[in-house]
Length: 488
Image (cartoon, rainbow, N blue to C red; front, top):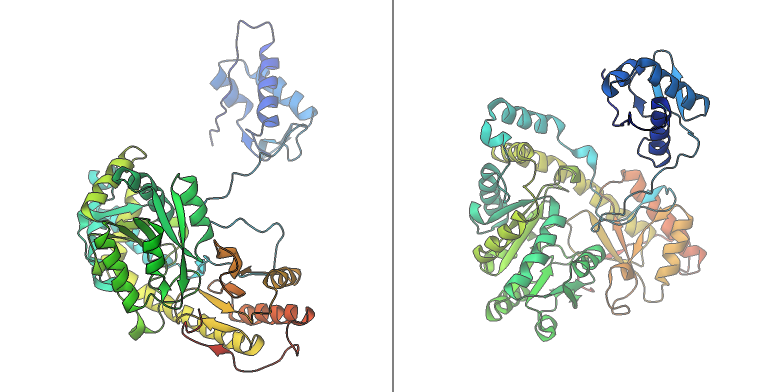
């Protein structure tokens, strides 16, 4: 293989050509540009690229190998040494704004939310869809896609969202994004153009999203969530004209926005020329089909932005999300997007459109929904067995559960004690804007865990409670008070 190396030599310099080459390589290795294990071109290839004699390259490599910067082995070529003198590893990039940082040390059971089971990804169906697209791809599919998304996917999403979620939209009002993170970023830039500089959020809610909104320059107003969902009266009193909500399965409590609150929120938006951003982050995973509500967007399509993502239905690595926006906002989003980038991967968009229109996505979701239902049932049983004094709030849906603890529980101490048992879990306070407004709780993501892991991790939390004398009898068994949002 013809490896290439980006270095230059100056024939007018007083330093020899071999010396210049040695200095250039030392600096690149020391600065971390050339990382340990990186393969370098052969001396013949390097000499040809630089227009120098091969002896110059040989001399430089031999000297650097003698100093410990390079390793030269027959059959494997010349590489940067694993422990090159003076080399260093650059610091890792900062965490993505909408993701939680990784734990400082490995843990056995990571119960943080937002993690789907990557093993459910439909590899064969995705490969078939991608092959179908490649077989017929023309200039339109291979060229830069429209910034709002490829027409095939925008049409497919408009039809799909109407069919499965009751969303009332047209293809021209759908924008394909690189996940919800980009969609939220675009909204935070577009809303001030419409005179909206404050965004209300649910409390408790998504902590990283809240911080992300603030970093985008928007003012954040927290609004209390109770057993019926977001308190619309408190929202109206706060003076915001836009609000980010999770009405179908509130994050993190799991409660559903009640019919009365849904009507009140739609009325608030119409009367105040307001905007509701509906984050339907796990709308595919309702296990009680009869109780599943349609999207809030259908009540006030002129005032609701419907946001979705393929991160849980498929995998986050595809970076596929979408916004179905009212036409005036859709136009503003187009203008903002055109200044930022040239759209997302066109072939991936077309493959996703094929997955939808062929019916393969529906088949995949039926299969994975059954798998997640079994984990939800295992989580419910484990909570009843190991934490009988806790109350599981919300409906049977989604990929996480909210366990409300007895009021006397020291939530922070419990989280610390669980970590000492190699269980990483967040308490309810982690998601609150205004502390002290809710009883102690644990927010537990179970979608990525094996069934045995769900039981073992909750048993470890039970032991952590017992150690701190927060329950009367360690390992007590009983029937958990599992309710549908009756004490939120």
